[in-house]
Length: 434
Image (cartoon, rainbow, N blue to C red; front, side):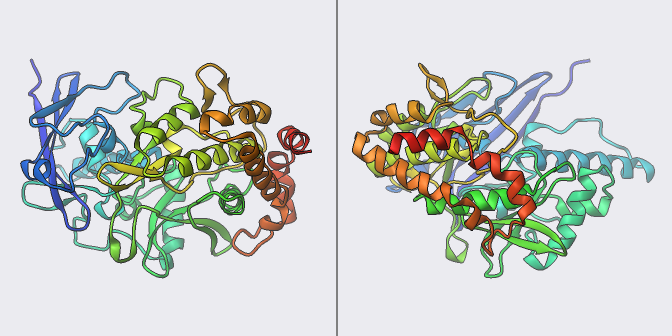
């Protein structure tokens, strides 16, 4: 018997003002899935219009999307950026299973349909959805909102509750109450590690990142250290600090796609800007090409990107894939590099970055090769030497920053992370600068 065709449609709006942008539809016919998007006439006529996604030109009519590989999203890139990350998907899937089980126990008819890609997309709380795109149903309700009208984003005071619920999910001991508490509060930035959206003391949106039960070092302190070092190295980085929940260090990273009063800034990952398939390798030079074509200040952003490339190699941040770089919209389709985020030193990994230097060179594994490629980023040898020197000096002082109050590393933590900062790449950088 042929399964019925499933179709779901939502309205797409922009920012706190919920400016109408278009409509997004999901279609499932057996194993075949696709999505379509159509701009609203008012958006196409607006003087403030811009392409919300590089694969959605400003034209009339429905624009079709079918993923090129099973690793890629069924949605156009801008929407894919707002999907829940690995941790968020885990919470949504567990919650779905618990609800089905509870309904079955009550003797209710349980639907057999598995979660769709649209279910996951709509499973992110509206308040925490990355960037400025928002989704609405036909009744005008923002998706997703909390069913009982409760607060979607908890304050810092609830860190202990958040930590307890995420730890329960991570160890497969979660209750229906745990999942109800976490539901919709996932974020799109951060992979599989346990986390939750939270409000900082001043009401600003932030991400609370928790230690994993599998950690053999203080990963949360390591990330906050890397973000503070990045700032010391002249990199625009997300604001972060360690907040203690009882005796457990939680990394609190403030969201850079929000402004005072709750305003939202459109965001696209570098992967989206490149229209990059998740099944392929990508390079820093490709991101540089995007900056040249789309940045409001290419000279500034090219130097900033090369600075980040140097920094990632010197601190052994080998998880520098295209989803961990991003852009914020400025105006009229021009963008700027978003602050650096998800910077993590890996003392137990070989110093080879996930992003390639260029398609010709391959993976980044040598600060000397990075220096030789500086001209692609429109840097002279003198400018490159200046940037390298600034980054090198910042990384050289890593232990002082590690012991500072916002990071709070112990001597044991410092010993665990030392190989990430005291390495052959730093020695080569010193020779280049001599």
